[in-house]
Amino acid sequence: MDLQLHNSKETITVSDAVFGLEYKESLIHQLVTAYMAAGRAGTVAQKNRSAVRGGGAKPWNQKGSGRARAGTSRSPLWRSGGTTFAAQPRDYTQKLNKKMYRAGMRSMLSELNRQQRLIVVEDITVDAPKTKQMAAKLADLGVSKTLIVTETGDESLYLSARNLPHVEVCDVAGMNPVNLLRYDHVVVTVGAVRAIEESFEDKAAESK
Image (tube, rainbow, N blue to C red; front, side, top):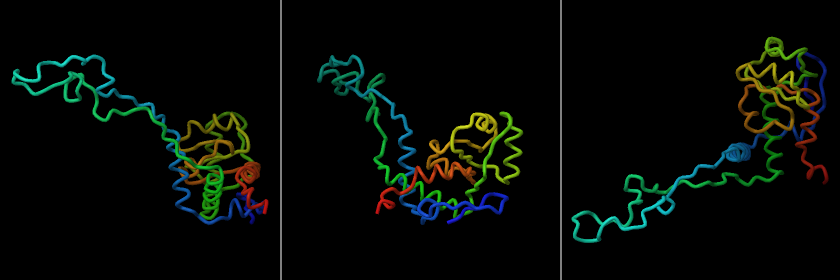
């Protein structure tokens, strides 16, 4: 299939296996959920009744005091006691193999192309790290809330965009399911398109 460059009659030929697949909602849901779960720290830690210091001695005799029975002063019912169902450090990572990840990314890119939210440009650069220059380029493209994907990292481009609300710049390696969903448009350079094809191609299908 062919992708047309923005404000140009030129087109580039791209792989149908990357930019022409059907939308797989269940796979993309699993992909986004797994990616967001992997970003959770899981470092929360609370003390249960056995982890709180002290409380080894029985506060008072079992009978005769007129008070309720108590075996430890570190019961969750007591002040300074442990926490009931105390949270412990855990790993939120969900298993997602590479084949599923690549298939989900291809499906997302195909849907962006189908909805005409994928904008291909020959290149996007700025003379200096100036927010004003980046704002002017985005205005020429007719986009505001957008993700800009380049083949390799461009520090000037990143510095020019970091003060603009709802604008993110990344290279192909930094592209992920969440930032593809977060923005209204995705602006990609021709070099980035070729790098995306190389990164997310279905190697198993091509080998057959």
